[in-house]
Length: 591
Ligand SMILES: Cc1ncc(C[n+]2csc(CCOP(=O)(O)OP(=O)(O)O)c2C)c(N)n1
Image (cartoon, rainbow, N blue to C red; front, top):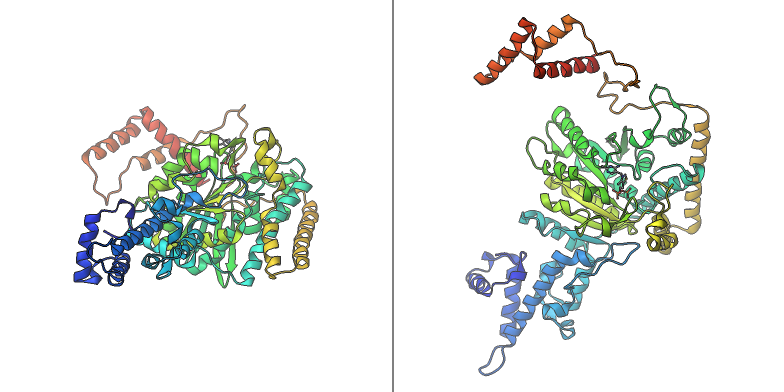
């Protein structure tokens, strides 16, 4: 038994056994029990039990045990009592973590407990222990990890979080970098809002802190051996990721808004939210290629596509060194909770034939799916509850606490690189406008949108913090905002200089022979005929088995039967279907 495990189900006999073991050899029991028994022994020496007196030592050890139970409860249930929702009061859960629920009282607050060793602060008062637990588990970050069954993973995370109170003090230059990313994220959306009135853009406003978080992953990835990042994401915030992180030129996006023609003859539709993009970013002398996969409107369908691309890269170019290829999937809260394909995809995540060495999942949890509040949209407590299926840790983070978000992003990256399993970040935020800016969110969410209307955006919240802490002056902040606005104005001017859009083909360097699909006029029949010679050539090639391999007799017979069809010029439906695929593959891949 391990004191760091389930103290809730304390078995007194087992503890007595452990105590006997400890007495024989203190090193033979887990560290946490060692501390616990040291406290117990101390209490016995200090307050020996005299005949006829009540046992102080027993009382002390009972209290030590109670504090241990409290610590375990914070680790397991602390996430239910966090301040992670920037715009709503959280639902209430019971029992709470109040000390009274653990047989402790106010009189115990200033008593010292050996149990403090368990969370790395040594012997400490209950007041200090509770303060430390509150800081670690119940502020802007709620973490679910105790369901993971591998003790070494749980311990690693626990120590990381408890030793740091789940935060990191950032140097000034990093804080300014974060501020700049927020200025770009909010400034870009605001510019689009005013310049292209009423046009759909699936604004990121309310959830902008995903941009500095992704920036942290991308810029630090190199230090953890990442060479490629594959991102799969839907509509929300896609334009922001493309421009501010992947450096797609602002002018190009503005031209797409002005609905001008592509140089290629493809139909203009929802193209700008669905196209893929590739770029390379350099940071501290390392470069990482980033690929944003194309995606259809069908939510979450991009998940397996992103995984497939990452797996192909691992197989073809990185010799299955999982650390080199990092998949990131960005979800909406309604989509991840509702779409079955999410479950299907993550079930592949640990299978030898499919795994990609762990995915960082980030949920843009704006608490609404189209028009529906999360309370009417799902039965699970969290939108991320599917994470438990594969025993992946989940960090729920208040999107208004930017530094917490960046800290979690970095921790998730380190975790993924160390254990090569999935990890989830649930970014608790809100959606400033309607689903696509054209609809009125107040029709279905009037109260929420009254709160949102008065709420400061993440950029301004962070700027106020940095101004208050003398990291930057208000004037410097205003200048940075104005400077970015000027960059956008210049890009807009540039966008007007050409009326043609040059589309970058996704993976143009890797897939040289694949072109854009041609627009098909369905009124006319499409010519799919191929010559008889090509037909025979393809048929022979798909009915021959490689000679250097062994096959079951049944397989050999099946192939022989198909090969006979060529001789007899008599084909069945199954062969017909295979020939259709073969002719299409030949035509599209090797035109
Ligand atoms: C499979 C599928 N079902 C339904 C839709 C229609 N649809 C488009 S966006 C949306 C709401 C998505 O909400 P959420 O996942 O929370 O993302 P948000 O837009 O709030 O960022 C729905 C239902 C769709 N595109 N795909």
